[in-house]
Length: 359
Image (cartoon, rainbow, N blue to C red; front, side, top):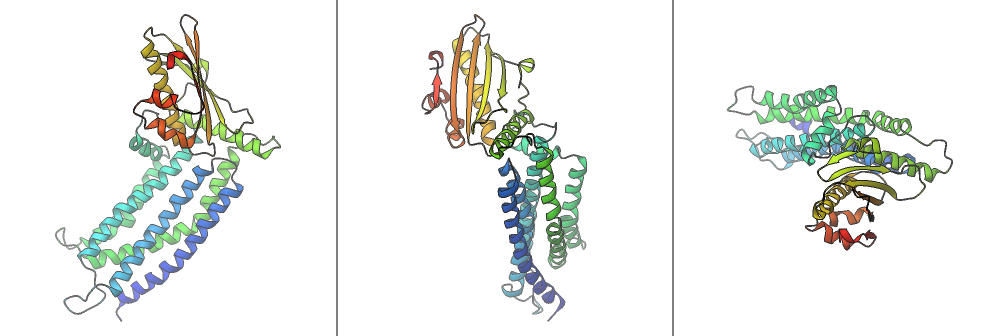
């Protein structure tokens, strides 16, 4: 039995043991979030889920490569086993791409929490990809540097060793042995740092608790959620959350108010429009455009709120007033977001009151 065979068998054994430890930690994390966290549980569950992928994906790769080399690959030209072939090289590069995405996903989820609990923001005009990298950028230069160094050490160095003889020939054996070694060490470090990560998340919950003097726990949770929702909207570019911060749009002025001091299970948002246009189609489309923007952000928010009320108060320059009232559940939002005719879809909603001009 050669040294590579012994190494791969050790990798198989360690992968099995670490899989068990990882599932135990995942179970602990989900129980901790659902039983002890007061608000924004989905947001924190995302962090733990992405963190678990940082462990499970490398372990899965280690297990597959070791199993394939020991029991599926044929012998090399000299009749030696185990033997790594070209398919293993393809698997290595495929894993590098997947692992890159998994690590970035984790830091994006951390960046989303960091953004909500800080003064940093992600403009609402950003698309999904720009917002993705903006969350990572909000974590700061130190974290960005650590991400890059981590990629180079874990993935770059083994590939560099493989090309040591020249760019034209990859020493697959050396690359895979170094990569498996680094990944096992990386996974061990991630399991060790899991408890500190959990503690950090719990401290973040305590540090940002707004209503500790309220006795009723359900009220505390709701107020926490509403405060978080207002802050989330602010970080996504909705800074017009008071009359002194009214936003000038192409159809007039607008600002909103998230009612945080209430005991209702639903989030109530008052939106105040002051319309200056004389064309009724411009007025209507402008209001619909802003409502759709808010609904889209609410749908993307990660909190425990399932029902939202958007109470639109519309004032014209001639002092005429109109109202548009919408109560919408989170699972109803995709129908409006993806609708080709927003106005028609809005009128079909169950809990909506629309003045004549908006019909």
